[in-house]
Image (cartoon, rainbow, N blue to C red):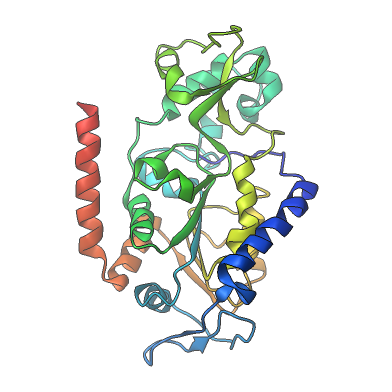
Length: 335
């Protein structure tokens, strides 16, 4: 699920870390990030370089598939939002009538956003934990889009996956935590609001499922899952974007409104010669107000668009086999 944290990583922190990350990237990839020129086949729309000498061309979904299939692009950064989880049955936050913000009246809160505000949480944590019971990992399962991203990882094409979601479905699909940046936190860990001790999130699952507010076993303070609330800083791992987006040779953006900062601005952080593919219900962000010549936009149903890309890649059978294997594992866990 996507949240709207008002707090951001401080500019000073980013600048302090960026020099070290840039130096590390230089050591790892060499000057220019080790970018290799990319050329498309005769049947594609044209050719361009991933360095600074890009030729303006109009790319298609087929071209993006070829870049992946031929491994001309193999440092793929992915950004995802709530739109990839709605096919799993999880409502997003803002859809009128069906989004979570439209359906929070039952939680006895003064206004919808209060459920993610620390001040209200300290006053009355029960509404948050009522919602947390619904969202806690294990209630929902990954869908085709999550497993497509897992396949990118299996094929060693995924540099990093940046997610606004707190549903844990990226983890459930089998993508390693090392490949994830959960920008708005997750239920995987929790912190006491009084003594600041950290705990595995699973330690308090039984309390949440039993409609109890979890309390610290040491000081009895309320234990809050490490979900980013309004005004809280983003996780330290978010700073990985300084290096990741500089190294990326393809950016995939799926199921997000690109409205929540600072996450949304990451879509503009790759070099202008790097292809960006938006798979989304609507045209959003800089794809609408400042499009690039190497942008590819696939609007409509996210799952259907992903399936089309998978078909162009020739990965359909592999994806079906992966889903069958992973679904079997989840079925075993449920027994």
